[in-house]
Length: 303
Image (tube, rainbow, N blue to C red; front, side, top):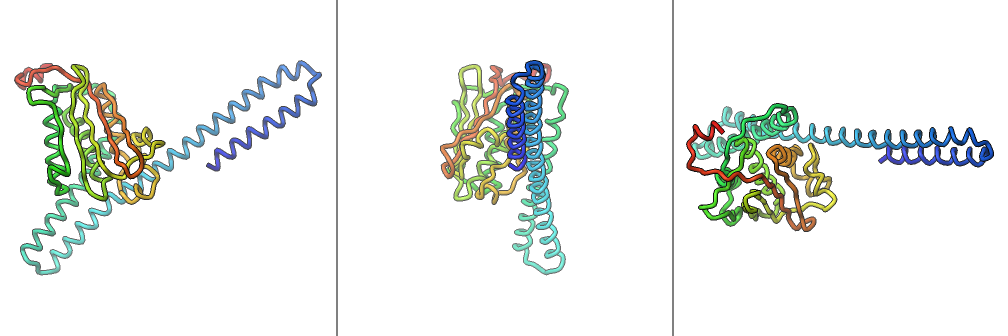
């Protein structure tokens, strides 16, 4: 904000000085013809410099926020695991209590691994230059498996996390990278659970738009997204600067990965929300591949 105001003030001072100079020298044609273009170039330079400076400041702020978030996401499970290990080492505990501690440590290690994988995946996508091998991938299977893992991890029921899908005789196939598409679905579900602090109610819809598109949408009843941030949430490191969101930890990479992977597969991702406190829907569309599921693995590998 400071740099924006400073840039505006500099432009204002330049305009005042130039207008005053024109008034004083309006009868001298040659200096005016030379001075006015240079003045316009000066103003353009000041404006561009201010814009780039503001963007750089915001980028640095997002980077610092990302570092703080990742530090927390790494430090918290490590501290927790260490605490439970010290307790197991120093105290005699019942078998039931030991199993409880083992379960907590496993969950913390899963959280730690997920954070590391997310950061590594973001770096991999940012540096990916060569074309990856794409094979037919059944999105229905990926969604079903991801939903099962999410229900198990967060102790959810079919009512908390439900699926609406096409009939079984309609294949939902895209050409892509299985691991990347798995990352997309997992991040969508994790975000929906994370931003539903007052109770999880998530509707997953898998639909077909003719022979052209596979549409995957995840709708929650959580804290919602302000309209001004619906596009920005897909930027790298971006997190909505609101109190209720700041309480929820994260790296700001989840939706960035979703959109980046979708676009690398020829699709896109976008979000809608009725407003704060009214939930949100994140939708991913991918080009549909009309492909028989009965093809052998050797034939799929040859494609």
